[in-house]
Image (cartoon, rainbow, N blue to C red; front, side):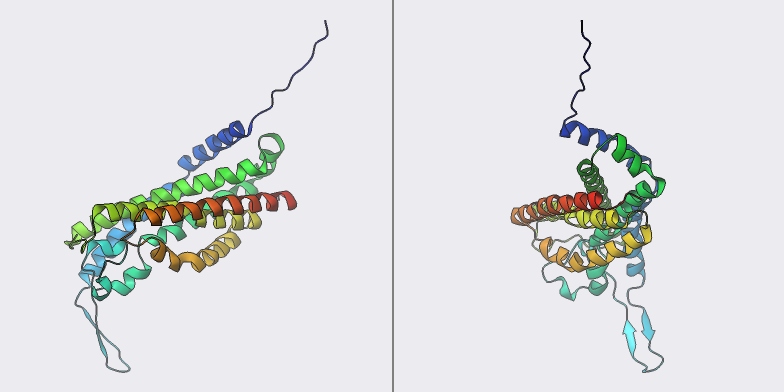
Length: 269
C-alpha cells in the first residue's frame, strides 16, 4: 500500500481568525492599551473640572493691559460636540479642538507602536515565513486598531459625563434627544476605520521606525481631523452613521490592499 501525505489547505477565514487571536491576546496584555484607555477616561474629567474652576478668572496682558476673562464650560455635552446655539457657550473655543475627537489621534499612537514592535523584534519576518500572509496581517491590525479606537471613544464619553456631573454642568440637550446622541457616537465609531487604515498604512511603510510612523500618522490624521465634527455632529441621524460606515469600509478595503502591496514590495526589516 502506498502511503500518501495530504496537506490540508487553510482557508482565509481560518488564517484571519488565527492572526486575530494572536493580536487580540497581545493587545489585551499590552500596557499601552490600558494606558490609552485610562487617558481617554481621565482626560475629559480633568479638562472639564479644571476649565470649570478657572471660570471667571482674569488674566492681564502685561504689554497691552488688556484683560481677558476665562469662560468655563456651561454644558456637559460640549465635550462631545457643539449643541444647537452652543456657539455662545463658555469655553467653546477650547472644546472645539479638545473634545472626544482627540480619540482619533490617540489611537494613532497605539497602531504605530503595535505595528513597529512587530518589525523591531523580528516577529513579523518569522510570522510571514511560517504562519500567515500579508493580507491577514493587515486586516488583523486594522481590526485591533478599530476595537481600541471604539473603546477609547466610549470611555471618553463616560469620562465626559462624569466630568460634567462633578462640575455641576447642565445636561440640557437644547432640543436634541437621546437618539441623536446614540447616532453621534455610532457615527464616530463607524468612522474610526478611516483613521485606523491610514495609521496602519503609514506604520507598515515606516516599519520599525516608530517615531516616523507616529509623526506621519498624526500629520495624516490632522488632514481629516477637522471634518470629524462635521460628519458626526451631536444632531446626527442614521444617514450620518451610514455615510461613516461606507467611508470606513472603503478606506479599510482600499488602504488595506495598499498596505498589503507595501509589505510585498518592501523588505521586512
